[in-house]
Amino acid sequence: MPLSKALFEYRLRKSARARHVRLRITSRSGLEVVVPRGYNPARIPGMLEQKQAWIRAALERAEADRKPSGPEAVWKPPDDIELPALDQVWQVTAREADAPWAAVREIGPGRLLIHGRFTDEHASRAALARWLVRQAYAHLVPRLEELSRQLGLAFRHVYIKRQRTRWGSCSRHRAITLNAKLLFLAPALVRYVMVHELCHLAEMNHSPRFWSLVQKNHADFRTHDRELRKGWKSVPRWAC
Image (cartoon, rainbow, N blue to C red):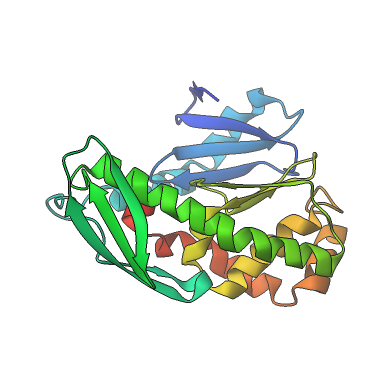
């Protein structure tokens, strides 16, 4: 949604799942105010004023994280790509070619070739991202299907995307979306995300009944939910 003006600039996002107002601050997006549907936006400026000390401190930390610590490094493809979710490490070879694009293909067990215009950061990162999504479709979707059968919670569609702020989501149309960046997480965290989204098929909320269902199917959900918040640090720069 468009930026609104108050004591701070912020993005307003209405969420059908939200029960309370939440403030989110990231180095990329700044301050985001998440409100339940039906919430009166006129109340936001007063609330931000009450929390201004916390907001200013959080914005300063986000700004410090955003600023580079030194001269910006010249782009080069990664030498290797580790995918903990699959217990895989891929060695990457780059080969220049006279082409306006870059592409990634597998040239052997655990070996990738990025060829074409690989020195172009945009083209190179786009090619690697496409490969990452292909890996996610090949490996995450079958895991979700198997877990769906085990839990007796059936979805209609599954999509793989590369969101910046969500590991997964579930729509009222019984469609589950998984983030391809889950491949950079430990298998237990990936399973937790899948269980979490599958449980939304039964409870489209975060009510006590929802969390009870999550706990029934993933006993360590509290620990893994905390660890998941730090999971973005595991995503390499080229995949952000």
